[in-house]
Amino acid sequence: MHYFSEFIVCLVTLAVAEGVRTEIRAVTGEDVELPCDAKSKADVQYRLVTWYKVVEGPPRMITGLVRLTENNGKVEKYNGVEREFKLLERTQSLLLSNVTAQDSGIYNCFLSAPLGHKNQEGEIILKVDEHLTVEQTEFNKGDTIYVVVAVTVLGVALLMLCFSYVCLRNVFQSNKKLSKDSLLKMPHQGKNFIVTKHLDCKTLAEVCV
Image (cartoon, rainbow, N blue to C red; front, top):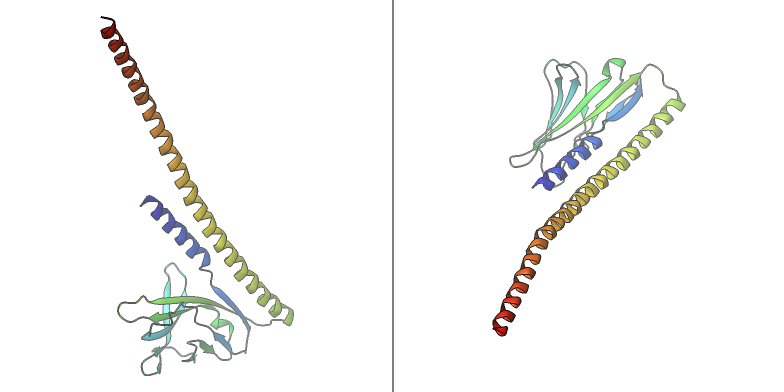
């Protein structure tokens, strides 16, 4: 049970390491499509797809933007939201047209699962600049690729490290137990030998008599 709990801690560490937000950069006036980063399962029919805008605190606050009801394909915008959004039913992505600096922030895609299944969510960061050169755009794309590769390598390394730690811990505990058993057996064997020798001497004495 102790080793199982250690393995769970390792998996949680790995999950945290993989929980890196995707970042998208755009220029004022562009149309931007934000993909839903929630880890959906293919065999689950989610009831709702909801997009929120997150304001990190403290306290952390979320504002509902738009939602899609899967069973009828109805898209509804939350009351009080003046910004126009388009939720793409096929990809569950959020489309923002003619973005401005005010659109910058953290966006949350939330999938409401049916009873018996787990809800899923993912966050993505949008940064809108007034001006962005072609070189900066290419650099951002390359930088995102490097981040994804680095996170993947780090995740694999952490998993291997956790697995090695658990294996070494098991070997150490096994060797320690074997050494302890050996020490317990040694005095017992010596006592048997002495008793046997004493009985032999007694037998010889009786024969002589």
